[in-house]
Amino acid sequence: MNLPNSLTLARIFLVPLLVVVLWTEFEGKELVGAAIFSVAALTDWLDGFLARRQKQVTTFGQLMDPLADKLLVTAALISLVQMELAPAWMVAIILGRELGVTVLRSLAWSRGVTIPASPLGKVKMMSQVIAILLLILGREHLREFFVLGQIALWVVVATALASALEYYRRFTLAGMPPKSPGFDPASPPAAAEREAVTDRKDQRLASPS
Image (cartoon, rainbow, N blue to C red; front, side):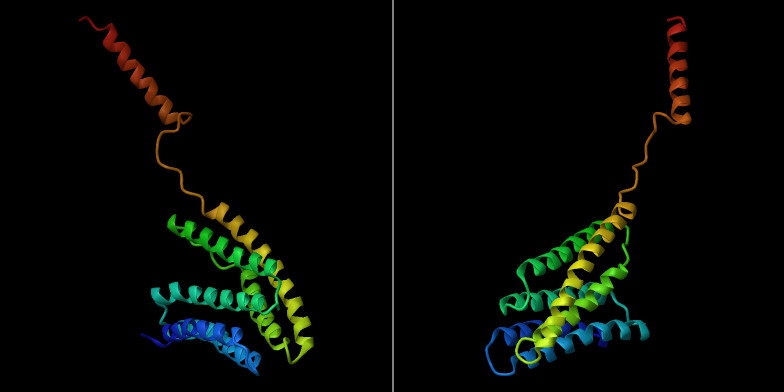
């Protein structure tokens, strides 16, 4: 297994550790949780960078990298709701968007169409990382961070909705199934063939038995 894939697996293994730290009461858990999330978010950038630079892009990495991202973000956001740092309805919108976009891209892929990542989706991902870090650190230590984290969370919700609409638009434009081959009744070749069949029937009827 190459280094980029190892970093992706490491990010997945950090997810349960992050949840345990954030859900357990002990002094300094916010700093420990923020450190774990920062390392995991760093591997998200690093594995893609190394895979492209070292030309080690694999099918395993392409499948597991987005899965690791979704596991990390989902675990962090649900933990924020449990810690009463983020409204449940906002987290529901963000996670619902993730599920919807995943379904759309999977349907398009099954039809042989690839929907590229939206620039708004990248903005959303960066906003998520910033919002989660600020909210965790702002719980007990820096209240100013908590306010900034709330603002960043609103940015996440806005970009999540906007990017979801963008993905749906791309799906309807590029992800529609191709027309199945067959005769078009209005096409000239089909009309000509019908006339030829009619002529042959008339000739058979006119011929002596």
